[in-house]
Length: 349
Image 1 (tube, rainbow, N blue to C red):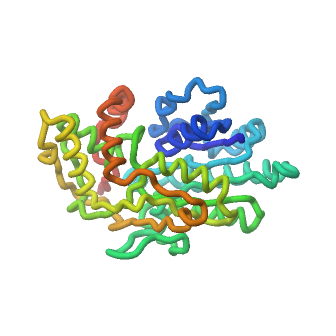
Image 2 (cartoon, rainbow, N blue to C red; image 1 turned 60 degrees about the horizontal axis):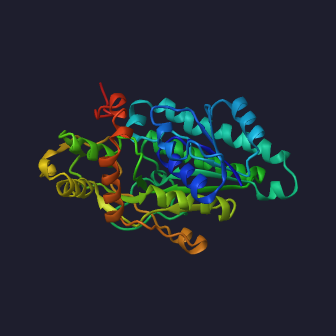
Image 3 (tube, rainbow, N blue to C red; image 1 turned 180 degrees about the vertical axis):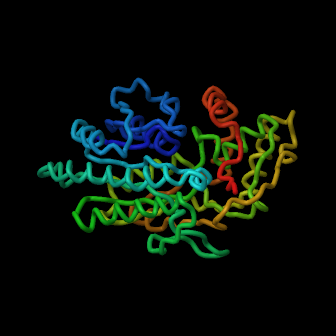
């Protein structure tokens, strides 16, 4: 099996590439632009594998994309490359529209022309997986779950750009008959996560004795999915999912943001007691503009059709994550030179 993964040096992408190379045994080509969030150090465990290779390219460069696809001759394309941080989209929406919308268009067209060149079994077995987010659905109230049929209602430039790319992927299936499957996931966490997101930011800040910023009153709720569970799900969806369908991937682990940060503090109190209590560092900051209140995924379709089930609950997954950051400063330390933990997405007059 030959699989082209876009965005394979990012957080979720690198977890997927490590899984495909090490556990599935697929031959993987990782296509990544290497923006601030792309880090080849996240692929160090498989760097010398003979079934792994890397090419640096921008998915918006159609000619380059088409050539890479034609040369590699993939059986599957798993498209994860995207600008993905809500805060950055608030003050830099252009990059999100270009990469997430036009870049996805470029990937779909490159894949379509390649697919049309195939014959027989190769054409029948080809798949294009478009990987997206639950943020396209907007915000939930106190009850209910996002289902695959939930109407789209994006709140941020990021989620709007991902919603647009989802619609393109579905349209390429309906109009051209291209073998496309779409996935929408809840919030991921785990090792190798760029330290601007809630969990890695607060782990590292707590380790360094810096303030732990929590938006608003910390009551916003997210459904947390351990990234290695997500990687397994993506492989299943791509290889066994029904064409033209959407599959939601969630961990069934709803937590308030403030409770997530307090749990991180409690684990660090245990593992690094010299600096306890870490929750004294919690600082409430002005809320994010358009901040969705609650996300929660119903993963029943994925669980019943494809037999997937998350292996980690939040308590086991967050402990593994904190322990990983404690043991791997060689990975995240250099990133603090690029991003020091400053507030992002602040609107200025």
